[in-house]
Each structure stands twice: as structure tokens, then as C-alpha cells.
Length: 196
Image (cartoon, rainbow, N blue to C red; front, side):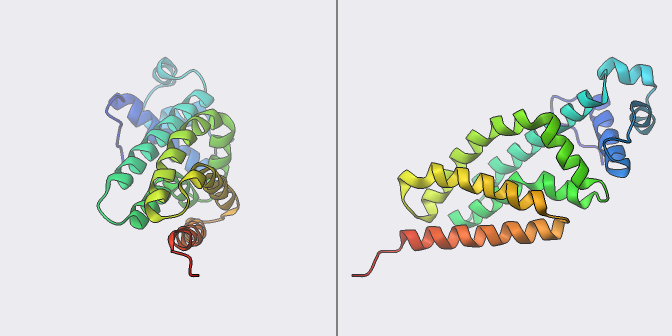
């Protein structure tokens, strides 16, 4: 399943797909540059023309995952439907890469941990724009406008906590859905006129 980003050369896309496949099959720690070259159908010399180390490949793979997640989040935010439906779509789009890696058992959790360790800065940099988008959608659902950025930060932290303990894709999706249910219920309750 080769799908490259528009600015990704076919060789680099093939390389990253092969690397992800090997990481998923053997884990990050046990996968070697030779394994990746073999899976991509390249010589080690050709591989080293693109990447000098496994960390560089994994970093590029992480950046590609982040870009795809960003594109999916923006598409979900612009999709037709209610604010609640778009909020749900945005949050699932944001963590879709985690669902995919958990599905790539038995090494999905190892890959998530390696991505967070090696590429954590990229994720942190994208949190601000995600939280602003999230706050805007939450305002549309209801609640106090001045609390939305703080709430968006809390939701981001809660998502990270939920996903850190999930052992499977099904478990992660179920826990994220529970979090979404609580969030949407709370926003609606905050928007409801108080009786008196």
C-alpha cells in the first residue's frame, strides 16, 4: 500500500512504506537498515543516499504520519455535519495514527513509544494549532467561550493519557468515544439555559 505525500519522491515513499512495514513486523529496536533496504528493494548504498541512520528514517516516517494526521484533521473539520459530528471526526482523525499502529500488533505500542521519544517535538508543535481548532469546534457545540482553550488543552492531555494505556485499536477507539461522550455532554450542559 504505497501512498506518498505530494512532495515525497517515489523512492522515498517506497522506502518509508517499507520501513513502516518492517518496524511493524519486527519492532523498532530489532529492525536494521539492511532490513529496510531489503524490504524497499534497494541496496544499502541507495538507502544511505537518502537516510544515514534508522532514527532519520523513523523521524521522516513520523513527520509523514503527522502531516497525514493534520490533513485528516482539517478534512474532518471542514466536513459537512453538526459541530458534534465534526468535533468527533477531528479527534478521531488526530489519533488515527495511534489506531493504525495499535492495529499493527505485536509492535504497535513499541512504535508509538519510539515515535513519542524520537519525534516528540513535532507533536508538541502541532498541538497549538490542533487545540485552537478544537476550541473553535467546542464553542460551536456550547459552553463558556473564555474556557475553551484551557478545555482544549485538557482534552489533548486526556487523549494522550487514554492512548498511552490502550492495548488495542478497539480499546483505544472505545476509550476515545467515551471521552468524546463526556466532552459533548458537558458542552451541551454548559450551553443549556439554567432554570431559575
